[in-house]
Every structure is written in C-alpha cells, then in structure tokens.
Length: 465
Ligand SMILES: *Cc1c(COP(=O)(O)O)cnc(C)c1O
Image 1: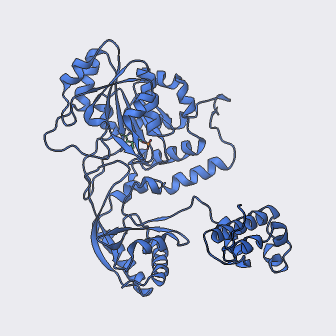
Image 2 (image 1 turned 90 degrees about the horizontal axis):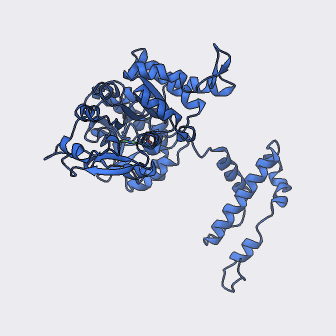
C-alpha cells in the first residue's frame, strides 16, 4: 500500500482500523457465532469478511468492519460456486447451464457407483483387469447398429482422436460449407489441425459436390470427413454430398469416411417445431465408417464424446495414446450406461432432454397458467404469451419450439434479471422486446413455486409496473 495521502477522507484510518483475524477470533460479540464452526472454516470466513470490507473501502465506501460482515462471509462459504439454477430461458440444451439434465436413473447410478469402489476396470467374471468402456459398448452398438464403440471426454475430443488416428500427417478432406465454429470460439478446423491432419478444404461455402471430394483424393488422403453444421443452416442455392454418397466414394477409393455428427440423436425426435435431424443409427446405416457425437446434446446424457464405427478402425482408435488422455471417469460411465438403458428399454421419454423437446404446447400453456397463478399470489402482475424456444447445444438451428412464458413488464428488465439470479436457487430468464420472459419449457412442476418466490422477491427490489 502507498503512503497515506492527506485527503483520503478517513479511508486510510478505516483501512488501518481493520481488525486482524486473531482479534476477530477473540471478539466476544462473535464468540457464540463462531463456536461450533471448525477453526479453519472460521478463519476462512473472517479472512473473506475482512478482504471484502477492505475492497469496499478501496472502492471508496467509507464503512467500518461490522460483525454482520462475518455473517455474510459465512453465507458465501456455505454457497457452492457450482450449484443448481432454474432454466427459464426456454433453451433446452443450454451449454452455459450445463446442457442436458440427467435422468433420475442416471443420477442414482452415479451416486451408487462413485460412493465406494466399483468394477470400473475389473472383469468380475474373470477376476482380472477389464475395460472401463465395456459397460456401454454393447448398449451403443445395439442402439446404433455400429460394430464397435468407444467413449471419450467430449465430442471435440472424439473428433481430435479420430482424426489423429486416421489422418495424422496425412490429408483430411472436408467441405468448406462445414467448417463450423461450435461455440465459445472453438472452431472445427482448429481442432482438426491439432490432430496433425492436413486440412484439405473442398467445394465452396454453399455448394460442394462429389466430384470436389473425388478430385481432392490423393494416395495421401487419410480420411473423408463430414461435419454436422449444428448451429447454422445453409439455405438457398446449396448443394452438399450426403453421408451415403460420400461413403460410397470412400468405399470405392479405400478411404474411411468420418462423420462428426455433434448433436447425435439416438432416436428420431418428433414434436411441434422440431426439424429433421440425422440420427446416429441412420448415419451408421448410410455407410459412415466412424461417427462421433456428444453425450450431453440430443442424447440427453452426461458430457461425453461417443465414437462408433467399424471394428477395424475403432481398434486403431483405441490404441492411440490420446485415448488415455481423453478417457472418461466412472461417473460418466455410470450416467451414460443408465441413460442408454432407457433407450434400450424403449423409454426415451424417461430422458429429460427428449421429454423437454417433445412436450405438447397445450401442456406448456397449462404450466405457464399455473406459474401465472402463483405469481398473482405474490402480487406480481404478468401475462401468459406464446413464445418460441430453441433446442440449443448446436442442434436444429432452425427449429423454433412453440412454447409458453409468463411475461413481466418491469421498469429495468436487466436489473430484474439480476435480482432473479441472486435468488437462493438462481432463476435464469431472458429479455425480449424490453420485457422479462420466463419460458416454462425447461421448468418442472416443482420449480414453479421457487420461481414465483424469486420473482416475488425481485419485484420487491424492483416493482413490476
Ligand atoms: C457440439 C459439437 C461438437 C463439440 O461437442 P462437445 O461434446 O461439446 O465437445 C463437435 N462437433 C460438432 C459438429 C458439434 O455440434
């Protein structure tokens, strides 16, 4: 800290007067509150409290340290940084909000398996080392029609691994119309380059033909790659080579075809507003040799990058050293196995993502009406209106899901959303046309009470008009 200036308005005096941790530990007025709290936690809280007051003083807020600062710090320590929020955005696969919510079956399996030891890499029949992927391979091959499967950390990792295996030091041919940026600034071409593959772009932004791939093929081509456009659509004067046609070309020339499917639905999703999405089984059936897709997009499971395809190619992928670097943990195996079982058992509606995407609009309207009633009890004026939500997570960019929301007209909508984020269970809404929109698509019945509670509190901070 610099030398005290002459016109600090008492700020330096207040800074100097900040109590030490030792003094606070023995302050009689705090004794009762701090008794029964482990000493390390009490010290952490006192440090945080003093630090927060110091920062406020430095910002120019002339308020001395108070005992209530300790109470605030204890509350901060008791609140996990990563915690549940209520998604009132209407976006089902919201990457910022953790993407797919897990089915209760998957959550229970994670708890069961991670609490103690498990047979993660232990073959119980043979009493010897086994494969951590064994529990999900049969489920994945059964559900996709592929010969073999492997699971890594996420789909970007899967694409990296597949390209590193099939095309490191060689050429990977891909259409210019498919070089997407996934989100968060990550671009498929950059991931491809990291694999060591030489990217060969063919076609134009809007049109790529079979002959473009064909004339780019050389003896050094390692793979023909197709990337699902995920978060944008190509409309108008366009042409692309379907997986089936690319697979035929690859077969004729002895070059494997790899499809980065991204969203990766296991079953067709039909419902109001949903658009056609190539499923994993359809992509395998179309002849793709290797397909990669995310575990936490349309599949509705844990974060994972699933790779399915021909046994001979998968055997090579499994031997690549990156497989070890990208391996999944037991919680992912547990959640994925439990989620895949729901599909195997013909119960996709038990997977929250599937259910949230296929809800009929009438039931959404009814839920919005129930939220409206709860808001009225809190004295909050709102109205129910139809909205249009998105799938999110880089899937079905053109789909506009007809949904319903409670709309609030408030003085400062941005500040209102901030209040909602400060609730015990933060509520994440959005602003449309200057109004606060609370879409009910991703809210469960039991979420409506807490949402109304948060809105009630927020409107006391800022009265809706
Ligand atoms: C989303 C997406 C990815 C990345 O998937 P993560 O599981 O988030 O790593 C890769 N490729 C495509 C085409 C995608 O849509």
